[in-house]
Amino acid sequence: MERQNKRVVDTDRLSDLPDHVLLHIIESMNIKQSVQTCVLSKRWKDLWKHLTNLKFHHSYPDNSDMFCKFVSQILSGRNHYIPLHSLDFEHEDCIDFEPKTTLLEVMRYAASSHNMQQLTVYARIRKISDLELPPSIFYSRSLTYLKLGFWQIYGSNSGKTTIPKLLNLPSLKTLHLRCLTFTTSDDGRAEPFSACNMLDTLVIICCYLQENAQVLCISNSNVSSLTVGSNYVYDEAHNYNVVLCTPKLTSLTASGRPTFEAPSTHGLPFLEEVNIDYTYPYRPCEDSIMISWLQLLANVKIMTLHFKTLVEILCILKMGAQPPCFVRLKSLKVELKSNDDISNGKVRKIVKILLRNSPPAKVDIIRKG
Image (cartoon, rainbow, N blue to C red; front, side, top):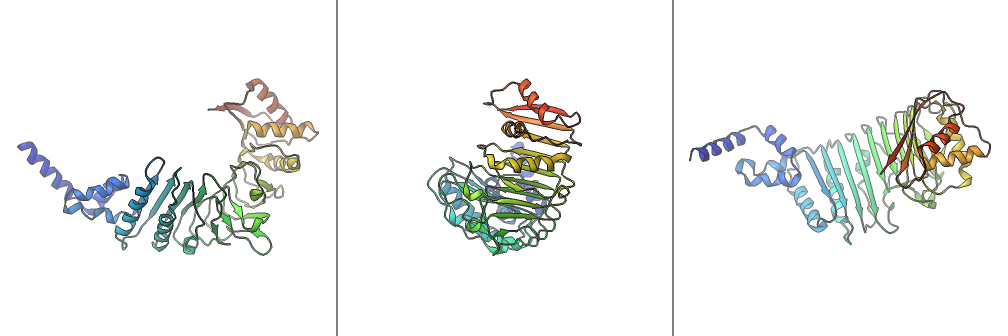
């Protein structure tokens, strides 16, 4: 009997804590557990409605229909007068279900939430139709982090969701875009990032240009970290040039087969770290592009090359091209996959050819998988 009374007293003590302390406790739970606290007592009944950070993650084989209904119930039941700081929605499924209504509901809720700082809406599903995103998302004065991606596992509808010609996000520091289409100007160029004055980290994966335009201009005076890539084997929809106007860039990752128009040798004066993974079939027309980028990377300190990229460079050098002098290079990492059947000794011989005009550097061979 004493133990039962002690348990009741302990429960009352917990319930007597200030709202901000109780909210801090349920913020550390997943969203379902947070909502379930409403059955503890009257004190807890509406507490979850004051959450300022919402995280909804779905993955196969969980039931998509139930998940989407749960998300809708939480958004409609939450206290709309409480500011929402972050909203994180990620959906991954392999069944014939289209959560378009839920995606739009999440986006509209985010658009109507004043002073939101972080927004993630990422959907990887079997079937998805065109989505028209709320324009106000791209004109938020409070967002510091934005991650958007909508793509199909199969089919050709990935990339049909467009974003405005110019993003006006003055507080944004991190932007991650996947399988979206950039709106282009009359001159056939897309230049969406120039007004994001605080942008530091930019990730662009498998994105398209409207009406098969040819140039994506990444123009931003503040970006220091950039990732550009595609998961696709050669595809006309991704066959556009990427022009860099990023004078403060320090880190660059290029994966798949993006085609860069290299700026002048003084265009990336602070570039120190690069990671290049050109893993798809070799195209001779890219020789000049690869050579120009090798010259551009002559000042980097840390370089990571995937093995197939290194082999392509070797093919170019065998045709008579001279490797640059990597005057500041301190570390070169070569990454191999489990099915790359070559000894470390042979890899080092290839590296020796690449670095024959350069001072000594530390070389690491990394085998993954």
